[in-house]
Amino acid sequence: MAQSIQKCFSVLGNDLRMEILKALEKKSMTVTELTDKLKAERTNVSHSLSMLKNCKFVKDEKKGRERVYSLEKSVLGDLKRRGNLLELMEFHMKHQCGKKCAEALK
Ligand SMILES: [Zn+2]
Image 1 (cartoon, rainbow, N blue to C red):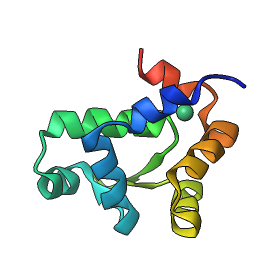
Image 2: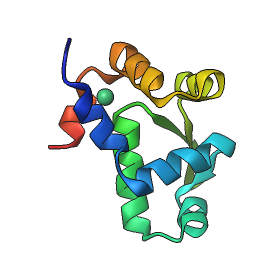
Image 3: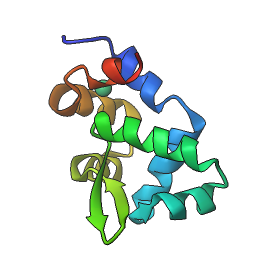
Image 4: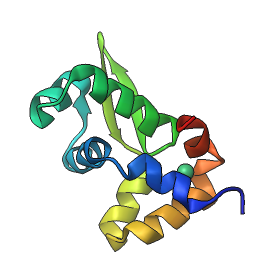
């Protein structure tokens, strides 16, 4: 086992990051759209997004001058199929994480 699951939960164990994932589950959004929707500070949203991206929970795509964020397909698929955070985390640790959450939390 590469690392403790605790690190991965710490990345998600944050209200704003959880809200971002929930919002992105419905549709892809830019930082501006997320900031408006969640009524959060733009810098906090950006920081959370880069953390989620480093940990492979979300991905981004350049569209003109903005970046559009969406859930990684495997994350979205897992949430839809199972709706079980624990199973999602197990999948994440096995296939996506590679200690990225531990690095993101440093
Ligand atoms: Zn992780």
